[in-house]
Image 1 (cartoon, one colour):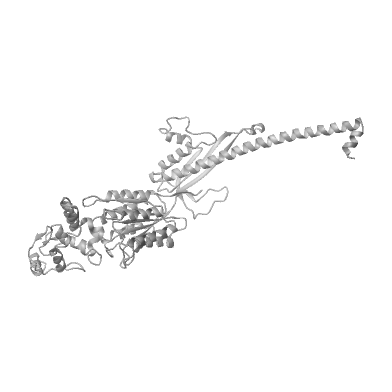
Image 2 (cartoon, one colour):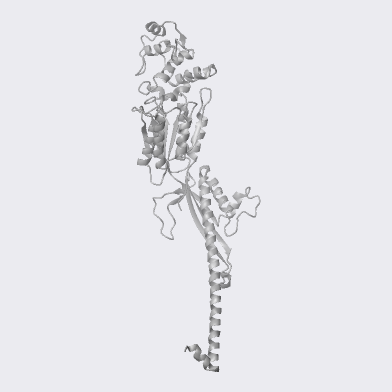
Length: 504
């Protein structure tokens, strides 16, 4: 028989004991309910505090990234962009600029008013500096307004009301968040086409191909090139060509006073030049200059037939097109990437080389002036006249793979004005795409630039699409093409498209 049964049989004393036990359970349940309510209240407030902290973290992260994206415009612009982004993100249901319908006009004033709870500084980030000890300042971030590449925002939101903690005298709470964003340093392989066709827009062939309307422009450009060479004098040769009907080379040389003048360069001769001008199949004849002798046609001979550095070494000095536009744009590109201290490095790859592949002129370096000097001292067809796009991609990829920095954003900038025609014995376009796929495997985007009407835009579009890059097409015009402004715009876009990362 159970204890409960015995108490019931015990008469009035048993009934009193049962009643007492039931009353104790009710009191205990009441206390437990109060405790559970307190736990629920605390969990609601703690959860709310965590939510507000998360909102604050997201707001500062977004603000830091927004500000970093504006560093190219200067420290003041970057700070305002960061503050605008932070203010537009509500934290704890509060938006700093919600009460001002004309906040855009007053943004700078609003920023000044909130500097105490939203501190924004520009500077540089040094990942190699030691991590801070708790309680000490983070020395990896150094403040500066001179070429800043990072931005830091420290935000505090005070007096955020609590719900149930007020019972215990805790009416509100504060949250603080810090975020630092910077430009991710880039390792960039610049792969340039220095094939023989990079002089074509300055040659007489354009008159034959595009019509007599471009004749004054071509002749003016050839005169400029003559002046770039120092306006040389050979015999009685004049810039404006004179017509000589004779087909005898000796007679022609005597007429021009060249019979006793040494030919000025390592490759070619006066006889080669005369034979070139007598031919009815060369471009000068097709453009109406057959048997016309002068510096205008002599320079065209050098550009078309003797363009390499070991043939006519002075041609790097001249403003032939489109090679000059490429040189100018590359120089400005080097200037652009130094507008902020992003710790970028550049490698210069030129195709072709003496082996008809490609050559790494400069390994990854921050000596941009030296890279630009090399570009300026190269000429169309410098090493070889052919176009090995695949070799250029391969050399750029290997340079990034072997010498690129851990943590740097790696990319290739590829430019060409022509069609892949090397290596021999294979499909040159397919070879270029095979090299592209190797870059895809390493996640290297390739930004491609097709220059002029003869460029293989379809191939360059495929290369960009496969790698997640961008293709820029500069088609040119029906004149001596001035690509400069278009190229500058493209290189500016590439330079400004810096990846951003949160570092803290």
